[in-house]
Image (cartoon, rainbow, N blue to C red; front, top):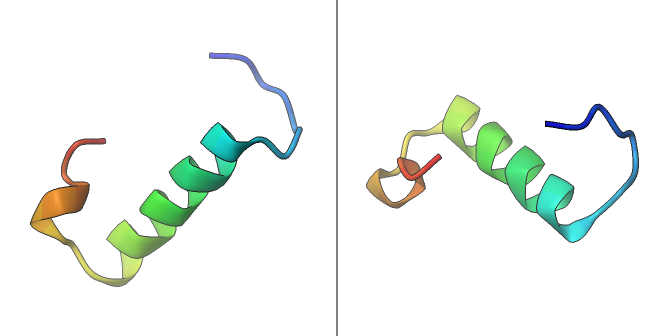
Amino acid sequence: MHEHHEVTADNLVHAVLELALQHQEHPDFKTA
């Protein structure tokens, strides 16, 4: 994994998924 601080679609999706997991765990988000 690269330690880039660039705003990419993949980074955005990953960040959103992690935030969603922190707030409430959804079975559909268990793919991470």
